[in-house]
Length: 466
Image (cartoon, rainbow, N blue to C red):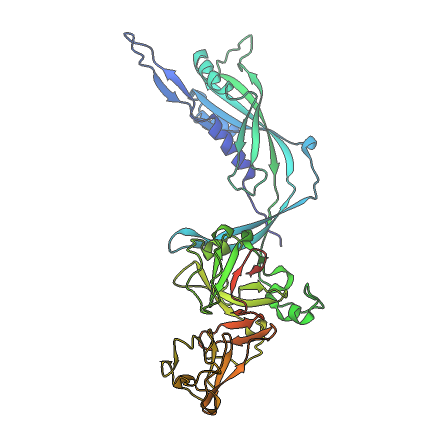
């Protein structure tokens, strides 16, 4: 069974009208010795229909009792359907509302998004409400004082607002002064001596609304259907649950850039971007730019970070994407920790290395561990030559000769001597290797080793998936 919802719409308009005609005052008393001793008396306002019961109550159930004056009473004199203001009666207006998360512990709103709703509003019904205001006074001076204060407010109308709800499209209206009747007495005056009343009639164009429908937006967990993603990939479209049907948002905020160093991502405004750290050292730095742009601000503009679910996607030169889930760095809101999906990174073409070293500055048992079978290093400098007759014992090659390796070569300890297993000279690009000590993957581009997917990503080459 459908239940009726009483919204007190007519009552709210009457309350607003009461506030309009309240707080008017009249003067009592006369001037004495040139000093104005007149007292200001506030005139009360009451809502009272023109009924016999109301009259009996006002006269305290006695014909010998006169109502106190001055006094103002008002009542609804008419309520008519306003056909000229009628609009499409079947129109439905939809409004999307997103709340901010409220922290009850701190009694404040957080910058992140909370609940989301869809509001469906039905077309309201137009009516014109007539209100009659009676001003009860005991003399003409009181009547003139009150009318002088009130009539100047309406020229010819006064705007009122019934609610402060920003989605209520019927809250604003106007109170229009229609007519003024100076006195209720007639000529000739009969045997009765009624209190003289001035009557002011008002018209208020109002709207009466049906209850709105509020829908809370939920989360679609899984949809299985015959659909493809934008690349025509059915497998990715079905297995990526959260991207289906717009459950997640893909955003590149404000054309800002991001920089990936190690497993930490920093967001930078374009003007804050500095030159990417040189790959000559092939080691990650701590920070690219001392920017104060916080990820909580970036993400809070669009929604809520879901740790371990929200993603950042980094577009590579071949239009592929390196994808990783993100969580906020607990020690610094300028960073998010990037947990890369290894299936989206380029596949290694070479066996992993133990470290990147300068062979002229360190070697086995000289800054490095003792040589062990299978150890592999990427060299940043050349070592040894055919003319070196006294090879360093740390880098002994085959048959006791010097290890002849160039910069960017990879060497491996095998069968008690060091040998070159990847000679960079003459090698085409597209070779990948991972440093198992730092977890960084490097790419040989034909000229030098560079970090394969780490570095600066300008606006448009990365996206945020919430």
